[in-house]
Amino acid sequence: MINDHWRDLPAGPEVPEIVYAVVEIPMGSRNKIEYSKEYGTYILNRVLYSPMHYPGEYGFIPRTMYDDGDPMDIIVLMDERTFTGCVIEARPVGLLMMTDSNEKDDKILAVPARNHRYNHIRELSDVPEPILNEIQHFFRRYKDLEIGKHVSVKGWDTKDAAVEAIDHSVQLYNENFRDAIAANAPEPKE
Image (tube, rainbow, N blue to C red; front, side, top):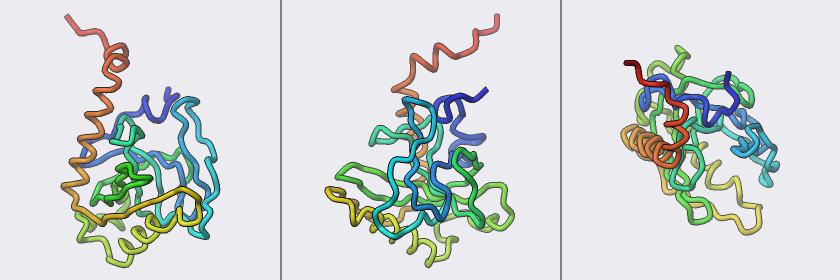
């Protein structure tokens, strides 16, 4: 039974090529919903101050920890919105490099691995430029009206950079939760 979407789910079926994306914020929403590691549930953090909406299914990759101490962020391109808590098998195609309040806060860009409409998208260069521009614009502006918040978007990097960021975040998670992982490991067979 899955009680904790961050700790109980694996990072994916074929990490780093196919990962699980746990949706916090469905596409089209202005609600900033965050998974609470403390309570193991989803909490409405705030409604975006700017009149903007999330351009894809936004969430995190389980069993990861990025440089900001949070799970690795991921945005999945979709035709239809899903729901908070939905798990999507996703294929990373790029990395949006950015900082939030002077802290590294990169985002993995992915497509659904089980949607034939996205089979042709394997690399960042396969994503139409208007979609990349929309996502970049959203993350550059979505905190504009919040006092004391500053976001800096540096731009896009390749699928290889996304894969490296995922590997790094899995390694950080494992280093930080080594004892908990060992405690839940099955007994070795004799």
